[in-house]
Length: 361
Ligand SMILES: *Cc1c(COP(=O)(O)O)cnc(C)c1O
Image 1: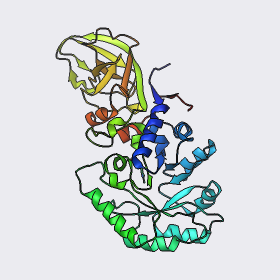
Image 2 (image 1 turned 45 degrees about the horizontal axis):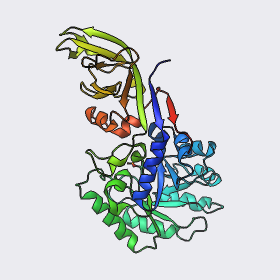
Image 3 (image 1 turned 90 degrees about the vertical axis):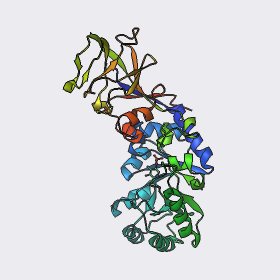
Image 4 (image 1 turned 120 degrees about the horizontal axis):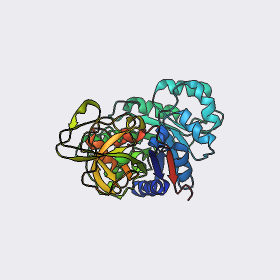
């Protein structure tokens, strides 16, 4: 069997969830959209189900996948419904949803759900993506309050555009805008913080936090941060050395021949490529680990294989264990080297099968 695979440590996931909730100080909705950022939504949700206050997903398809797997916890559709015809399913499966546009309120009033549903009202406090402007927000809030089909409490939510930049004034401005807009309304439940908010912006923590990336052990900030350093990596992307060759100085390696050995070089071939989600343009020097020792990518990453430098690792041989990211090689380092983000690397995992450590509590 091809040795490329991802090992998902569900104990680490639970540890990171507990850290998010401890820092948040209230409830924490585990964000498991995009197949739990590439980690497997059903397995991750099952691992958290006993602990969790609820889950957040991007769309009803993702919510139904969890319900079909027997997940009974609260589930929030972060982007609400895309079409009014989702409302019967939302009601049947008791899904919570965000609203961010008047057409959604019109559709809800027309449908008039037969039982109370969890509704989150999303304010655009400065990101300028989804959400009501502050004035529209106040009107929407008043329009929803007291409707028999709205479960108490109605939740006021907003999302940050730049909370990963700890020196930016934008997050403070977004919080101030949000608070000012809510001040004249009767608001009992508030949700603002994503991972970067939870870790780095104490004022954003409030009643309900929404950790995504941090659950999976990656750091949302561009540099080390004290709270983020308490996270444990959840995914370890692994493979093996499948061939070794000794090259003289002056020999090109791989497609394009862009890398040329400057000395006699021992090259290891690894069964892992961009079709598995490893970044195609990870440059020479991107860290990897071979038998728990640091090495580096040399030559261009191919679809199914990549090459690493074994010159200083004489004990490495056919079958040596390789970690592309995980406990020995931080995914944040790989992201930085390849001008990517941990978000993109994790959600881009493909083909390499996943296996799970510690599936039961
Ligand atoms: C994805 C998402 C989150 C989680 O963001 P992270 O940066 O991964 O923590 C939180 N809230 C909303 C609305 C989201 O779409």
